[in-house]
Length: 251
Image (cartoon, rainbow, N blue to C red; front, side, top):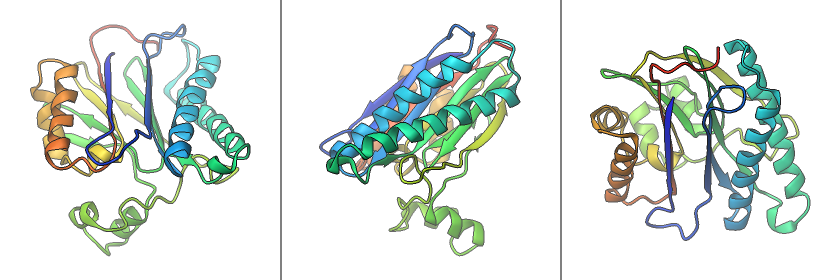
């Protein structure tokens, strides 16, 4: 996998409550990426996303092994998410300033034929090919439930005043339910992990065209950030781009 990432405070917020991490070619041979979007006030959001990113990567690396199947990787990732949830909750109990903090999480762990995705909240993963873009994850949010019921359209959801109200996050509850997906990828295909700051300002079609049209991953992410800022970038913007190469990943 070729991987790169970017995070930016945006044009309105004073602080960046997003966090991300990239671990290329871990000792087990896997590539691990994670994006978190914190909530609960400036200090709380920054603390929650940072704790979740660091804990997730550390705990996942402890249990990864080269021979894991995609199903086993999905279980390992879910385990790491649960430990990250505990860590966020423990920190929240130590200070009144952090009492209501929490964070979303979306992650990807490579295997020989693609990546395993985990998510909690409304940060997303997209599978991008030269011709298509497919959202892999499902938002845990109020408006996503409204779309699924047929109350509003997906386009109306992008502009809904309650679009940022999430129904699931790391931190608030002792037990966390994590969604897991297996995403097969062909060489040359991409996986884009991003916070809602990007989703709210850049359309899926623009993501697909930018990702497949850029010469490098870094150029692609810089262009996506440029588009977001041209539309106000009211929230922090974070994205990680993975491209499957012909190189061998762990199987």
